[in-house]
Length: 199
Image (cartoon, rainbow, N blue to C red):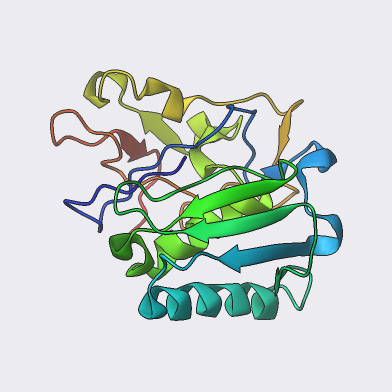
């Protein structure tokens, strides 16, 4: 599950719903979790507001445009594997990759109010994990373990390049899949510090 804190949506706090699988910069190596031909059938539950649906469909359309049609979110037409988009006010989250059967993305209002969070959840559904879990992340960021909330440490795990890949693109500080510098902070101090100046 990916959860964005309601009290400060400008700082992204994420967690992944479902079984934890090794993470990659841009996608799962195991192709069985990928959506065939980049097509993701979906339905939108009646609980999702009209305004939320507009934001969600815009993000879907943007993925189609940005990937030149390689990724397509399509209205479900009886497909066995599909995404059900739901609304619950607690927790902005998604499963990672195609699991088989119906799987959900939850979008509270405060999550769809953020274009980046809306896109982030869809990337999880497509099989993308968090940037700072890349095997080479220590070359780019330093994790401040003492500042992380108890029980949230697993969100900062990194995985070997035998399990994950960056598909040749390298580390991306500006990725929508990168945690903020204060993600899961227990004391208001940074949990992620860049090893190079970004200014």
